[in-house]
Image 1 (cartoon, rainbow, N blue to C red):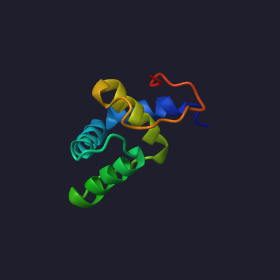
Image 2: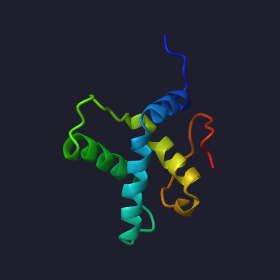
Image 3: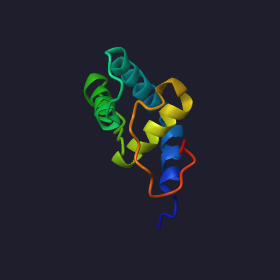
Length: 100
């Protein structure tokens, strides 16, 4: 039985896959530069998936869990204060160190 919290699973995944956050930031900055004041983190996540699955054709079976989407939005905002408010985050059901 896996007793890890979603945050613990997320941070393990993030540590093992640092490129994912880099792609989230890259695509978010492109959207912002295009003139958007707000955007969907879910749309960005699907762009990251497209990039890895199609454009780079990942051979290692890379998977991006939907459960991590909100954590990526919060981590991206935490590490890039200029993106604060770009994503509209709902209140998490569990306590997270990413709450800002």
